[in-house]
Length: 281
Length: 328
Figure 1 (cartoon, each protein chain N blue to C red):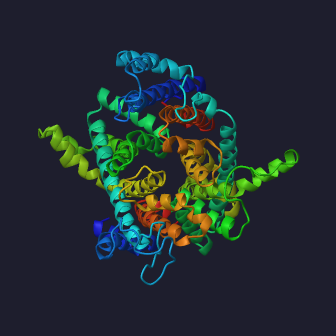
Figure 2: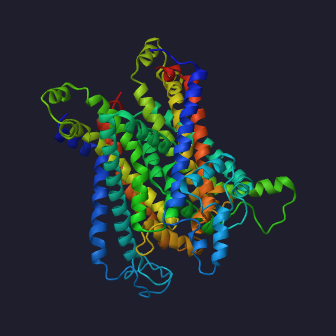
Figure 3: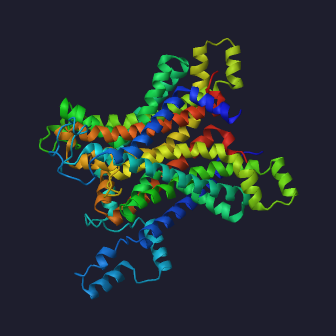
């Protein structure tokens, strides 16, 4: 199937179409939103504490009179930024480990695979919480922790594909022509793993967004620029639920749900296309 | 291809599990000793502590010895269950973790996991029987949506809706602290009443995953030859799906449930935090908030041991159910 054919099938799939539109919308909101809002993230006293949503403050206000729409928009930026960057880095790391491990094999590969097995055995989010608590809160630490604990599944699947690709005739031909290991690896093997790597990266994005939200809620995110999870932490600690300040609680959570959902829909649609067994029986 | 006998397979997997355990506790050692936020730094580097006291403390904690020696002492301590004292509670870490809190978590996590498995399987079966119908696609959408909701936010929404607005359930806690309970039944009912919301949240976030896994594996199985044979025998489509496809989808699902127990604990941390449920999850949140390093390390090792053992048992069960796993 050509890549255009795949794209057409993907966009014809209702999950794929909806997910793509949603994600594009969120990226635009996160990119443009913070520029358009007249307030700063730490500009307090622009309205009464816990003011209800109104025309001038559509999302209401928090406990020190900050505009919640402004917080929501900058939170979108942080959440999506962490999600995309951490997913990209962990996929890259996992793919490289899988490529080198699968191609060269040997003792190093055996050791790495034992570490991967060990890391896969326990829940990564719990590990992330513990690691982040020890390292201390911060944007960089959150990205670091998510990256370092998310790559093992990617390396596992890439490695197993490399193991089979390296036996293909075209790789053998390249080797017979005297191509170097690096050339074979990056010219003849790596391109063939691209679809798998892309599919995994999409999964990694939703996992990273969920992980960031949880870390932010537990107070391990950057305290200076709260993400959606960080805003919910403020809401929780200020007793917004008991007081019935729904405008403080609902938007950031919906933001997380929509972001994760868009990515989940995209990967579900891709799965239905790439795995024709799921299409019809 | 020869199959390894079950005891030999069990021994080989046990060795593998032990290797994993050592790798992970070594990672924990370097994380908790060598990282910038050294667990003892704030105690030792405080100007209020007399230099002599500091030296004594270092000696007591064994921090004056070379790193490799500390490493062996640490391994020995972990193996004997000596996990040190909590900085916040001042009591042994093991004493705080093993007790009432652990029971509370096991009750909550156990019951919701069970409910999520039962409901997930039931929904998947319904979906495949009515494949391509409105019901099928709504169940799939429902699952994708619940799968995308952050646990803690769902909990917050539930509290706002059912506790604050409708006043149906308590806002949090495990029992009503201000009430004198008349007998065990009264206490149990109060406990269950507090458990309804956290139980529902923890069940809801698990259903989606179970459903999607079983539904997809059933849809793949439906094209296998044994299903063709079952149809050729003249069995009704319903009987084919229930008796053949569904049954074949269970063993692989069992492994995934085992692996998934891992994720459930994370759910428990978030749920227990939001609902003030006095369990291990809430305790871990407190340990994170107070930077209680020995307690965090205790959690690391407890979680590690629990999940490696579960994985091991699930693998054995799977090898017993499906001998192909033992093929060399």
